Length: 198
Image (cartoon, rainbow, N blue to C red; front, side, top):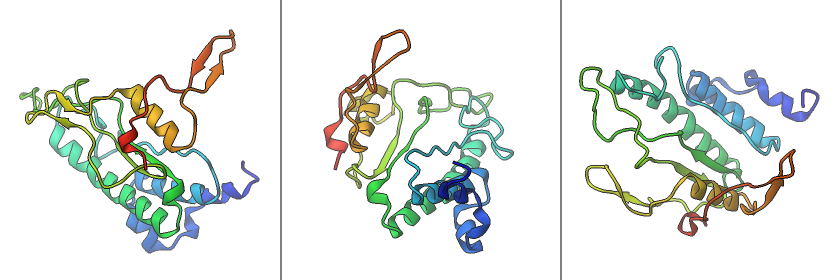
């Protein structure tokens, strides 16, 4: 890869200052810009992570200090993600790029750690955002109760989300890979959420 066209994607100095500024100066924001540059060069899979940083040292795991931490992380997320989506759209790349934004766990709908001002792990309901190629945009799928404690409509699971992402990317989620000991392993154990697909 280092001798390929894709290697040039890592040189962000080739971008105009106003473009770099629109993504934000954070590692995440500049990572989103690099993601766009990699996608332009045909790299098929790109991951950009947003976690611990100097302004949010505990990342999204906000058992304490929830509100200032989420504010700092959201500022980075908003600048980088919105610029990435707009840039991909402007360049005609969004319709062939499937985007997923998600964490590994939900958080309690209310602040339970009152002494620490935090929100704890909550596996009963969580949010992810899908966009771009293969995804029917402009909608919310599923609904929780008014207090956010349980899913009332469109309940899914991680397997369903992964199967849906595979389908959006034109990969059969039932495809099996064979492990080194000869065991077949499906790419995704779940059912496609058809309402999300374009």
